[in-house]
Length: 370
Image (cartoon, rainbow, N blue to C red; front, side, top):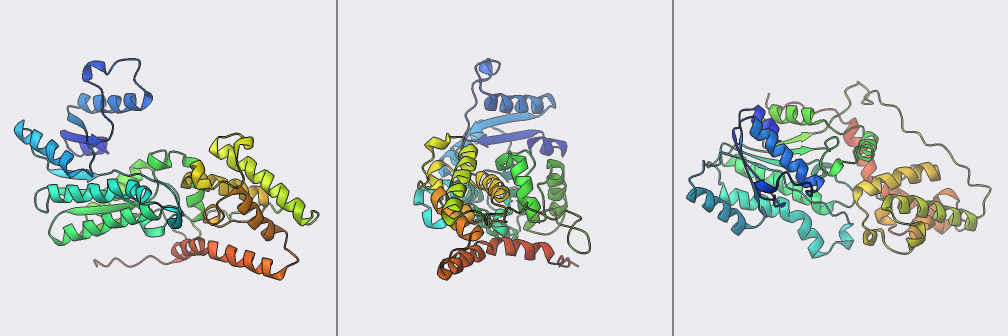
Protein backbone atom coordinates (compact mmCIF):
# COMPACT_ATOMS: atom_id res chain seq x y z
CA UNK A 1 0.00 0.00 0.00
CA UNK A 2 2.86 2.36 0.80
CA UNK A 3 4.30 1.83 -2.68
CA UNK A 4 0.92 2.51 -4.25
CA UNK A 5 0.62 5.78 -2.33
CA UNK A 6 4.05 6.79 -3.58
CA UNK A 7 2.96 5.96 -7.14
CA UNK A 8 0.13 8.43 -6.61
CA UNK A 9 2.48 11.19 -5.47
CA UNK A 10 2.97 10.72 -1.72
CA UNK A 11 6.40 11.85 -0.55
CA UNK A 12 6.08 11.65 3.25
CA UNK A 13 4.78 8.54 5.00
CA UNK A 14 4.23 7.71 8.66
CA UNK A 15 4.04 3.91 8.95
CA UNK A 16 2.74 2.55 12.24
CA UNK A 17 2.56 -1.02 13.46
CA UNK A 18 3.08 -3.22 16.48
CA UNK A 19 6.61 -4.24 15.47
CA UNK A 20 9.48 -2.14 16.80
CA UNK A 21 12.25 -1.78 14.24
CA UNK A 22 15.89 -1.81 15.43
CA UNK A 23 17.98 1.38 15.27
CA UNK A 24 19.13 2.18 11.73
CA UNK A 25 22.72 1.38 12.66
CA UNK A 26 21.62 -2.24 13.15
CA UNK A 27 19.66 -2.61 9.93
CA UNK A 28 22.44 -4.56 8.20
CA UNK A 29 23.03 -7.10 10.97
CA UNK A 30 22.86 -10.74 9.88
CA UNK A 31 20.94 -11.61 13.06
CA UNK A 32 17.73 -9.87 11.96
CA UNK A 33 14.84 -12.24 11.32
CA UNK A 34 13.20 -12.49 7.91
CA UNK A 35 10.14 -10.47 8.94
CA UNK A 36 12.19 -7.49 10.10
CA UNK A 37 14.45 -7.75 7.07
CA UNK A 38 11.44 -7.57 4.76
CA UNK A 39 10.11 -4.44 6.48
CA UNK A 40 13.52 -2.75 6.42
CA UNK A 41 14.05 -3.55 2.75
CA UNK A 42 10.62 -2.13 1.94
CA UNK A 43 11.41 1.12 3.77
CA UNK A 44 14.75 1.44 2.02
CA UNK A 45 13.06 0.87 -1.31
CA UNK A 46 10.67 3.74 -0.61
CA UNK A 47 13.50 6.02 0.49
CA UNK A 48 15.41 5.29 -2.72
CA UNK A 49 12.41 6.79 -4.51
CA UNK A 50 12.86 10.04 -2.60
CA UNK A 51 10.23 9.35 0.05
CA UNK A 52 10.63 10.38 3.69
CA UNK A 53 9.55 7.43 5.82
CA UNK A 54 8.86 7.53 9.56
CA UNK A 55 8.28 4.04 11.01
CA UNK A 56 6.82 4.01 14.52
CA UNK A 57 5.72 1.18 16.83
CA UNK A 58 2.25 2.11 18.12
CA UNK A 59 -0.76 0.27 19.50
CA UNK A 60 -3.28 1.97 17.25
CA UNK A 61 -6.11 1.12 19.64
CA UNK A 62 -4.41 2.90 22.53
CA UNK A 63 -5.50 6.54 22.57
CA UNK A 64 -2.56 7.65 24.73
CA UNK A 65 -0.04 6.04 22.37
CA UNK A 66 -1.52 7.73 19.33
CA UNK A 67 -1.87 11.15 20.97
CA UNK A 68 1.70 10.89 22.26
CA UNK A 69 2.93 10.25 18.72
CA UNK A 70 0.99 13.23 17.37
CA UNK A 71 2.20 15.51 20.19
CA UNK A 72 5.82 14.53 19.52
CA UNK A 73 5.46 15.23 15.82
CA UNK A 74 3.96 18.65 16.60
CA UNK A 75 6.86 19.49 18.93
CA UNK A 76 9.36 18.40 16.29
CA UNK A 77 7.71 20.60 13.68
CA UNK A 78 6.91 17.62 11.45
CA UNK A 79 4.64 18.04 8.46
CA UNK A 80 0.95 17.54 9.29
CA UNK A 81 -0.71 14.25 8.46
CA UNK A 82 -3.08 14.79 5.55
CA UNK A 83 -4.54 11.32 5.08
CA UNK A 84 -5.23 8.10 7.00
CA UNK A 85 -5.21 4.46 5.89
CA UNK A 86 -6.23 2.07 8.66
CA UNK A 87 -5.17 -1.47 7.72
CA UNK A 88 -4.75 -3.23 11.08
CA UNK A 89 -6.35 -6.62 11.64
CA UNK A 90 -6.16 -9.81 13.71
CA UNK A 91 -8.08 -13.09 13.47
CA UNK A 92 -8.81 -15.72 16.12
CA UNK A 93 -11.28 -18.23 14.74
CA UNK A 94 -13.85 -19.71 17.11
CA UNK A 95 -17.57 -20.37 17.21
CA UNK A 96 -19.47 -17.59 18.97
CA UNK A 97 -20.53 -20.03 21.69
CA UNK A 98 -16.87 -20.74 22.48
CA UNK A 99 -15.60 -17.16 22.44
CA UNK A 100 -14.22 -15.61 25.59
CA UNK A 101 -14.17 -11.89 26.29
CA UNK A 102 -10.40 -11.89 25.74
CA UNK A 103 -10.73 -13.65 22.38
CA UNK A 104 -13.31 -11.15 21.15
CA UNK A 105 -11.29 -8.21 22.44
CA UNK A 106 -8.14 -9.45 20.71
CA UNK A 107 -9.89 -9.45 17.33
CA UNK A 108 -12.00 -6.31 17.56
CA UNK A 109 -9.34 -4.15 19.25
CA UNK A 110 -7.20 -3.31 16.19
CA UNK A 111 -10.16 -2.52 13.96
CA UNK A 112 -12.82 -1.09 16.27
CA UNK A 113 -10.68 0.57 18.94
CA UNK A 114 -8.05 1.53 16.37
CA UNK A 115 -10.50 3.16 13.97
CA UNK A 116 -12.28 4.96 16.82
CA UNK A 117 -9.02 6.41 18.11
CA UNK A 118 -8.12 7.60 14.61
CA UNK A 119 -11.64 8.98 14.14
CA UNK A 120 -11.25 11.09 17.29
CA UNK A 121 -7.65 12.11 16.58
CA UNK A 122 -8.50 13.09 12.99
CA UNK A 123 -12.11 14.31 13.05
CA UNK A 124 -14.01 15.00 9.81
CA UNK A 125 -12.49 17.98 8.04
CA UNK A 126 -8.98 17.55 9.45
CA UNK A 127 -7.62 15.23 6.73
CA UNK A 128 -8.01 14.92 2.97
CA UNK A 129 -8.96 11.24 3.07
CA UNK A 130 -9.72 8.51 5.60
CA UNK A 131 -9.53 4.98 4.19
CA UNK A 132 -10.50 1.84 6.12
CA UNK A 133 -9.38 -1.55 4.81
CA UNK A 134 -12.15 -3.94 5.81
CA UNK A 135 -13.05 -7.44 4.66
CA UNK A 136 -15.80 -9.18 2.75
CA UNK A 137 -16.06 -11.39 5.85
CA UNK A 138 -18.29 -8.67 7.25
CA UNK A 139 -20.62 -9.13 4.27
CA UNK A 140 -20.62 -12.88 3.60
CA UNK A 141 -19.50 -14.29 6.93
CA UNK A 142 -16.87 -17.00 7.39
CA UNK A 143 -17.32 -19.87 9.87
CA UNK A 144 -15.47 -19.09 13.08
CA UNK A 145 -14.95 -15.42 12.26
CA UNK A 146 -17.97 -13.85 13.95
CA UNK A 147 -15.94 -11.28 15.87
CA UNK A 148 -13.82 -10.48 12.81
CA UNK A 149 -16.95 -9.97 10.71
CA UNK A 150 -18.40 -7.69 13.39
CA UNK A 151 -15.20 -5.64 13.54
CA UNK A 152 -15.23 -5.11 9.79
CA UNK A 153 -18.91 -4.16 9.84
CA UNK A 154 -18.03 -1.49 12.39
CA UNK A 155 -15.57 0.01 9.90
CA UNK A 156 -18.34 0.18 7.30
CA UNK A 157 -20.61 2.00 9.77
CA UNK A 158 -17.86 4.44 10.76
CA UNK A 159 -17.19 5.23 7.10
CA UNK A 160 -20.85 6.07 6.54
CA UNK A 161 -20.89 8.26 9.65
CA UNK A 162 -17.84 10.25 8.58
CA UNK A 163 -19.11 10.51 5.03
CA UNK A 164 -22.36 12.01 6.28
CA UNK A 165 -20.27 14.63 8.08
CA UNK A 166 -18.54 15.64 4.88
CA UNK A 167 -15.31 13.68 5.27
CA UNK A 168 -13.83 11.84 2.28
CA UNK A 169 -14.06 8.38 3.87
CA UNK A 170 -14.16 4.95 2.27
CA UNK A 171 -14.37 1.44 3.73
CA UNK A 172 -13.20 -1.28 1.34
CA UNK A 173 -14.62 -4.76 1.94
CA UNK A 174 -12.42 -6.97 -0.20
CA UNK A 175 -11.80 -10.67 -0.42
CA UNK A 176 -8.37 -12.19 0.16
CA UNK A 177 -5.38 -10.77 -1.67
CA UNK A 178 -3.28 -13.34 -3.47
CA UNK A 179 -0.21 -14.35 -1.41
CA UNK A 180 -0.70 -11.52 1.11
CA UNK A 181 -2.06 -10.99 4.61
CA UNK A 182 -4.19 -13.69 6.23
CA UNK A 183 -4.45 -15.38 2.83
CA UNK A 184 -0.76 -16.17 2.48
CA UNK A 185 -1.75 -19.82 2.02
CA UNK A 186 -3.17 -18.88 -1.36
CA UNK A 187 -4.09 -22.38 -2.56
CA UNK A 188 -6.50 -23.02 0.32
CA UNK A 189 -8.15 -19.62 0.04
CA UNK A 190 -8.33 -19.87 -3.75
CA UNK A 191 -10.14 -23.22 -3.57
CA UNK A 192 -12.64 -21.99 -0.98
CA UNK A 193 -13.41 -18.83 -2.96
CA UNK A 194 -13.82 -20.94 -6.09
CA UNK A 195 -16.56 -22.89 -4.34
CA UNK A 196 -18.34 -19.56 -3.86
CA UNK A 197 -17.94 -18.69 -7.54
CA UNK A 198 -15.22 -16.15 -6.77
CA UNK A 199 -11.45 -16.01 -6.29
CA UNK A 200 -8.70 -14.08 -4.53
CA UNK A 201 -7.75 -10.74 -6.04
CA UNK A 202 -4.33 -9.55 -7.13
CA UNK A 203 -2.85 -6.40 -5.58
CA UNK A 204 -3.26 -4.69 -8.96
CA UNK A 205 -6.98 -5.54 -8.97
CA UNK A 206 -7.33 -4.36 -5.38
CA UNK A 207 -5.76 -0.99 -6.15
CA UNK A 208 -7.77 -0.60 -9.36
CA UNK A 209 -10.97 -1.22 -7.38
CA UNK A 210 -9.77 1.26 -4.75
CA UNK A 211 -9.19 3.91 -7.43
CA UNK A 212 -12.61 3.24 -8.94
CA UNK A 213 -14.47 3.41 -5.61
CA UNK A 214 -12.53 6.49 -4.58
CA UNK A 215 -13.82 8.27 -7.65
CA UNK A 216 -17.45 7.75 -6.66
CA UNK A 217 -19.51 9.25 -3.87
CA UNK A 218 -19.71 6.09 -1.74
CA UNK A 219 -18.74 5.31 1.84
CA UNK A 220 -18.41 1.56 1.32
CA UNK A 221 -17.36 -0.70 -1.54
CA UNK A 222 -17.36 -4.51 -1.74
CA UNK A 223 -14.50 -5.83 -3.87
CA UNK A 224 -15.33 -9.40 -4.94
CA UNK A 225 -14.73 -11.01 -8.35
CA UNK A 226 -18.07 -12.34 -9.66
CA UNK A 227 -19.06 -14.47 -12.69
CA UNK A 228 -19.82 -12.47 -15.83
CA UNK A 229 -21.41 -15.13 -18.06
CA UNK A 230 -25.15 -15.04 -18.66
CA UNK A 231 -25.85 -18.15 -16.60
CA UNK A 232 -23.74 -16.95 -13.68
CA UNK A 233 -21.32 -19.83 -13.99
CA UNK A 234 -18.39 -17.68 -15.04
CA UNK A 235 -17.24 -20.59 -17.16
CA UNK A 236 -15.84 -22.40 -14.13
CA UNK A 237 -15.97 -26.17 -13.98
CA UNK A 238 -18.33 -27.94 -11.60
CA UNK A 239 -16.92 -29.07 -8.29
CA UNK A 240 -16.96 -32.87 -8.45
CA UNK A 241 -15.99 -35.40 -5.80
CA UNK A 242 -14.98 -39.00 -6.44
CA UNK A 243 -17.74 -41.22 -5.07
CA UNK A 244 -16.71 -43.71 -2.41
CA UNK A 245 -18.57 -46.91 -1.61
CA UNK A 246 -18.86 -47.55 2.13
CA UNK A 247 -21.60 -50.16 1.80
CA UNK A 248 -19.32 -53.17 2.28
CA UNK A 249 -18.36 -52.11 5.80
CA UNK A 250 -20.23 -52.48 9.05
CA UNK A 251 -21.25 -49.36 10.96
CA UNK A 252 -18.41 -49.91 13.44
CA UNK A 253 -15.86 -50.37 10.63
CA UNK A 254 -17.04 -47.20 8.90
CA UNK A 255 -16.77 -45.28 12.16
CA UNK A 256 -13.24 -46.57 12.86
CA UNK A 257 -11.97 -45.94 9.34
CA UNK A 258 -13.39 -42.43 9.36
CA UNK A 259 -11.76 -41.66 12.69
CA UNK A 260 -8.38 -42.95 11.52
CA UNK A 261 -8.55 -41.02 8.26
CA UNK A 262 -9.73 -37.80 9.87
CA UNK A 263 -7.08 -38.10 12.54
CA UNK A 264 -4.42 -38.39 9.84
CA UNK A 265 -5.77 -35.41 7.85
CA UNK A 266 -6.19 -33.12 10.85
CA UNK A 267 -2.86 -34.03 12.46
CA UNK A 268 -1.07 -33.29 9.18
CA UNK A 269 -2.74 -29.88 8.86
CA UNK A 270 -2.02 -29.02 12.51
CA UNK A 271 1.55 -30.29 12.04
CA UNK A 272 1.45 -32.61 15.03
CA UNK A 273 2.05 -36.39 15.27
CA UNK A 274 -1.08 -38.50 14.87
CA UNK A 275 -0.31 -40.15 18.19
CA UNK A 276 -0.44 -36.73 19.90
CA UNK A 277 -3.91 -35.91 18.59
CA UNK A 278 -6.51 -36.69 21.26
CA UNK A 279 -9.70 -37.55 19.38
CA UNK A 280 -11.83 -35.98 22.13
CA UNK A 281 -9.90 -32.71 22.37
CA UNK A 282 -11.66 -29.67 20.84
CA UNK A 283 -10.06 -28.33 17.67
CA UNK A 284 -10.08 -24.81 19.14
CA UNK A 285 -7.62 -25.93 21.81
CA UNK A 286 -5.31 -27.22 19.09
CA UNK A 287 -5.03 -23.85 17.35
CA UNK A 288 -7.39 -24.49 14.44
CA UNK A 289 -8.09 -21.38 12.35
CA UNK A 290 -10.28 -20.74 9.31
CA UNK A 291 -7.53 -21.43 6.78
CA UNK A 292 -6.80 -24.78 8.40
CA UNK A 293 -10.52 -25.54 8.49
CA UNK A 294 -10.76 -24.90 4.74
CA UNK A 295 -7.85 -27.26 4.04
CA UNK A 296 -9.20 -29.98 6.34
CA UNK A 297 -12.65 -29.71 4.82
CA UNK A 298 -11.20 -30.11 1.34
CA UNK A 299 -9.13 -33.16 2.29
CA UNK A 300 -12.04 -34.69 4.23
CA UNK A 301 -14.34 -34.32 1.23
CA UNK A 302 -11.86 -36.21 -0.96
CA UNK A 303 -11.47 -38.90 1.70
CA UNK A 304 -15.16 -39.37 2.51
CA UNK A 305 -16.51 -38.79 -1.00
CA UNK A 306 -19.30 -36.34 -0.16
CA UNK A 307 -19.56 -32.55 -0.08
CA UNK A 308 -19.31 -31.12 3.43
CA UNK A 309 -20.65 -27.89 4.89
CA UNK A 310 -18.46 -24.91 5.70
CA UNK A 311 -19.41 -25.17 9.38
CA UNK A 312 -18.61 -28.87 9.75
CA UNK A 313 -15.52 -28.53 11.95
CA UNK A 314 -17.19 -25.97 14.18
CA UNK A 315 -20.41 -27.95 14.64
CA UNK A 316 -18.50 -31.17 15.35
CA UNK A 317 -15.37 -29.84 17.08
CA UNK A 318 -13.44 -33.06 17.84
CA UNK A 319 -12.17 -35.94 15.73
CA UNK A 320 -14.51 -38.33 17.55
CA UNK A 321 -17.57 -36.12 17.10
CA UNK A 322 -16.75 -35.50 13.44
CA UNK A 323 -16.24 -39.21 12.74
CA UNK A 324 -19.57 -40.06 14.38
CA UNK A 325 -21.39 -37.41 12.36
CA UNK A 326 -19.84 -38.49 9.05
CA UNK A 327 -20.48 -42.16 9.81
CA UNK A 328 -24.20 -41.37 9.91
CA UNK A 329 -23.89 -39.50 6.61
CA UNK A 330 -22.16 -42.27 4.66
CA UNK A 331 -23.51 -45.38 6.42
CA UNK A 332 -27.16 -44.83 7.43
CA UNK A 333 -28.07 -46.27 10.79
CA UNK A 334 -30.83 -48.79 11.46
CA UNK A 335 -32.32 -46.20 13.81
CA UNK A 336 -34.50 -43.74 11.79
CA UNK A 337 -34.05 -41.09 14.49
CA UNK A 338 -30.25 -41.15 14.02
CA UNK A 339 -30.65 -40.71 10.27
CA UNK A 340 -33.05 -37.80 10.77
CA UNK A 341 -30.64 -36.04 13.13
CA UNK A 342 -27.75 -36.49 10.70
CA UNK A 343 -29.83 -35.05 7.87
CA UNK A 344 -30.93 -32.11 10.02
CA UNK A 345 -27.32 -31.38 11.02
CA UNK A 346 -26.21 -31.54 7.40
CA UNK A 347 -28.98 -29.18 6.29
CA UNK A 348 -28.27 -26.69 9.06
CA UNK A 349 -24.56 -26.71 8.28
CA UNK A 350 -25.29 -25.94 4.63
CA UNK A 351 -27.11 -22.66 5.30
CA UNK A 352 -23.98 -20.57 4.73
CA UNK A 353 -23.19 -22.41 1.49
CA UNK A 354 -26.75 -21.81 0.27
CA UNK A 355 -26.44 -18.10 0.99
CA UNK A 356 -23.22 -17.98 -1.02
CA UNK A 357 -25.02 -19.70 -3.92
CA UNK A 358 -27.86 -17.17 -3.78
CA UNK A 359 -25.42 -14.26 -3.74
CA UNK A 360 -23.52 -15.74 -6.68
CA UNK A 361 -26.65 -16.20 -8.80
CA UNK A 362 -28.24 -12.84 -7.97
CA UNK A 363 -28.24 -10.29 -10.82
CA UNK A 364 -26.10 -7.20 -10.23
CA UNK A 365 -27.93 -4.21 -8.83
CA UNK A 366 -28.33 -1.16 -10.97
CA UNK A 367 -26.06 1.74 -10.23
CA UNK A 368 -28.09 3.80 -7.76
CA UNK A 369 -26.18 6.93 -8.70
CA UNK A 370 -27.77 6.95 -12.15
